Length: 100
Image (tube, rainbow, N blue to C red; front, side, top):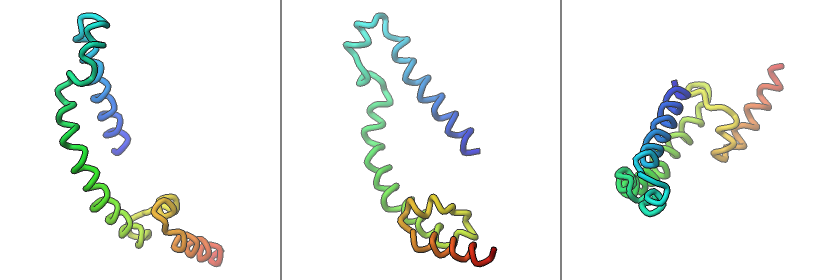
C-alpha cells in the first residue's frame, strides 16, 4: 500500500514537472521562465513551513511513543535506533538471546 502510494506520488510529481518543460516553446523560453513559472511552486512556499512544524512536533513524537511498545505497533529495531532508543533495542536483543 505504501509503495503504491509512493509510486503514484513520484509519477505525479514527474508529470507535473515535465509538463512545464513540454509547454515551453523552446529551451530558451524554459530557461527564461525557470521553475518559478510553475503554479504549484507558490503552494509549496506556503505549505513547507507548516509541514516541517507538523513533522517536528506531531509525527516525530507519535512515532517515538509508538516505538515504546514495539509488540503492539510493529516498530522495528532500525526505527528504534533512528529515534535514539538504543537502550530499548539492546534490551530486546538481550531478551531474544536469553529465549534462545
